[in-house]
Image (tube, rainbow, N blue to C red; front, side, top):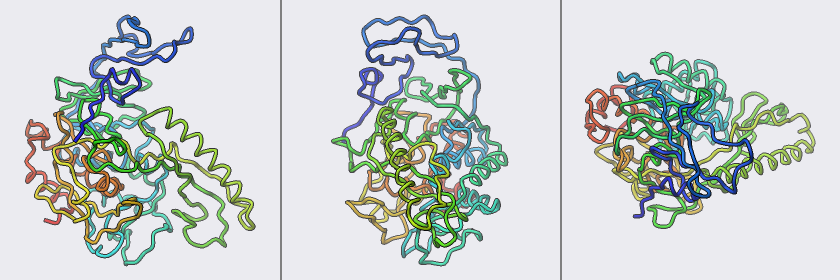
Length: 470
């Protein structure tokens, strides 16, 4: 197995995606225009000088502006649930999010259906995602935020309004934003929006907090335990944890990277058009899957290309749609804040969930969540499990080589086939529930996540109504 620990020097040369530890070194391509430059630390940075062509060295003194027992980096479905679980389990918790709202790609990316609460096909009697994620869905229901229809066939009788969750739950993104805010207020989670986590604070191989950039400048926030819910594993990779990439030779379970998608919301759908119209429908509005494109979600230039091309392509598609008889009233109501990135890094943990584990529905003694979502692109086809889900073990949440850190969301330790299932939003919420509880136990015991007793974690999860098949 080949491990990747991209270095700061690699970044400067354009060949890596790591985050610098103690010294920022940024590449300068072809010089800088007069008057341009990097603004950091709001005056706290010492005088910098270019010591070699194409490399800019800058040493920083970053003020520490807060301290928490647990910091969750990323307010998507998994990170939001992780923050709730940590706070509910007794930890003083801060949730950091780059946008001005919570919900992550579910709302910013208009991916307005939570898939994977149970198997999509028989056997599907077991609801594999319960606990705090189910409470969140109940809050969306209370707000009247369920979608009228979605594109997934309903073969089995389930009713989200009663808590019996089907395979997928479609929802209104604005209701989801409010549901998130209501729940973090109830559980006492501290919130910091409009902030990018740009680097870990490190004492050797132990995380001691994170560095954030915002309109307030560059600041440090200390923590006993950090949860990486960035999706891309930015914090873990920056701290030196090894990781896998889908298209990197030598990686276990390597496969074709899942494509990016630009989601969009269509308005003015004629009453004569029945059904979900290929998406998630509320009244005369429907959220649909837009153009798909290949791209590297860790490369800003590639992301820029994909954003531009998908938006131009979508605009043309809408104009063509409007030319069809009876469809003149439709219009492009909204596009996603950003293109939906499905796959980047998968951090290597103490346990790697293998493809064969997912296909066989393997059970683990240290189970902390279950994934029952189909594998969407398994050797060129959508693969439906012949079981009710495979176990995700605690070791998949604990990165190698780094202490004081837990993983959650789509960056957990999986081969690609297992990842394609567990990256669905309902399973990631179950994983978030576990990572938040584990962080709280680590804080309470004054230990690293690596030393958390799984039996204690399972007991805590079960007390909060999680499903572990135990």
